[in-house]
Amino acid sequence: MVLTGLVIFLDQLSKYLASTSLAFQQPLEVMPYFNLMLTHNYGAAFSFLNDAGGWQRWLFTVIAAGVSVLLVTMLQRFPAQERYTKWGLALILGGAVGNLLDRVIYGHVIDFIQWFYHGEHCLIGFSKYGPDCIWPSFNIADAAIFIGAVLYIYDSILVQPKLRKANG
Image 1 (cartoon, rainbow, N blue to C red):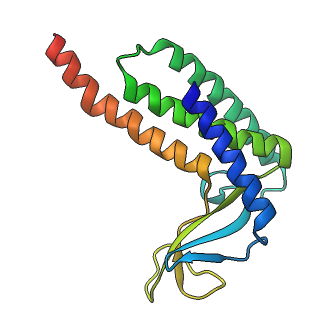
Image 2: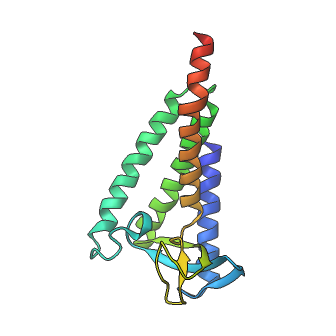
């Protein structure tokens, strides 16, 4: 649970710093393919249902709260030997709670990390700044959820089957 708390703390701190330091939807170039740009996501992943009129806030709040309770239960049931699974679930839980706090407090999720590349052929889409292929903006919570899912899948597919086979 220390990892979960660390994710929540870093997520909320970074969102506070982004909200107080960045101008809304004005990119701040950090590197040629990396911006900090404050955005608000009223929907879910990839801004799904972003413009749905407000009801989605409560739907995603209830879903995130339910998933968080489920994750706490799962974390308690896995043995300590399944550390990648536990780390993965702890990261996912921290990310879910970080974004849940945003929805409850602000009514939207604060995003500010943006990766992109310049090019003529764009698979993702065009931005108002030109023909840039931009990955949707995200935050520390989203990154923790992604990394946690990778760890959970890694342990479930690669590590645990080998251990079960070795033990017998």
